[in-house]
Amino acid sequence: MEINVSLFTVNKRFPLTISRGTTAQTTNVWVKISQDGIEGWGEASPFGVGNHRQSTDTIKDALEQVIPLLQRFSPLQRQEIEQVLTENQAPSSVKAALDIAMHDWLGKRVGLPLWQIWGLDRHAIVPTSLTIGINSPEGAIARAKDWLNFTDVRVFKVKLGSPDGIEADRKMFLAVQQAAPKVEFFVDANGGWSLEDAIAMCHWLADLGIKYVEQPLPRGQETSLAKLKQNSPLPIFVDESCFTSSDIPHLANYVDGINIKLMKSGGLTEAMRMVHVARAYGLQVMFGCYSDSSLANTAAAQLAPLADYLDLDSHLNLIDDPFTGALLTQGRVLPNDLPGLGVQHSAFAT
Image 1 (spheres, rainbow, N blue to C red):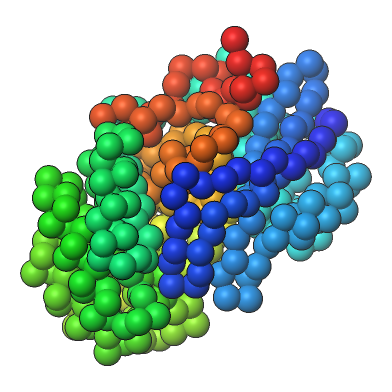
Image 2 (image 1 turned 45 degrees about the vertical axis):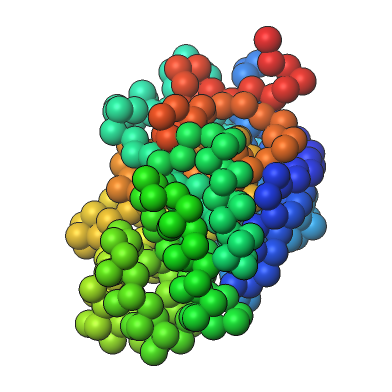
């Protein structure tokens, strides 16, 4: 198979601030594989979690190293390709881009969307949350109103873990909740709290009707999750602490759910494994994203019927997304009926 790589830069409508910093623009990687006159598309987007930092340059360099090793394969040989990528220590985002592209190619080869190949029910897809980053109370209210005026919002995910402490978190959250009284709320601290603060915030947020708290403690402090779970009235989800299915058994007794992201997992193949392992341990599942365009988020949307919660909103916050695919309908990111991912590029859309 032939593999081609190109870069594209996307800009956020609303810059996003979390406990680790602010992002307004990213340069992502578009991977195209072709064989038998069929082209499959995948995307890799940069992200950083602790020591796991995958920049655009890192992704591009890794792709250039592995492409010569993969050209002898067919897109149908996903297991063998996965083994080669693992043996060569390819970054997870590189694995994701190639795996997404191979799935897209397969769907186009058989003429069916991926969700239909897997026998999934689009009607089971839950509304996606839209994200409000760390801000002043006034700034957060303005951001919430921007989202409410821009699109159909059913759920807000509010980023907490402010460097100014939990009092700043409380003031900001109350302001946003009062500005959008008809919207459901989730909370993500991105590892920005201490154990003591996390316990206090979970009790405080439970009284406000929040459904769950995501990644309350920093990656690397997983042993403290047991004490947090014992003292929290809210379900605890992990994101930065859980990359692949092999992480789940070590976390299962201390959390209630996991956030699966294609860039962390290495693609749809591993994401499906994670769903099954999580369910075997009685955990809930959500799908999230980084600074992904419609290409990667439409790929995740193919698996969305399997999720309890969704946070696939990054493409909705782009002013220059070059792709179209899954559409926001009644607050839900729904894949279409086109074969494969069902993604089109603006330069080729008809």
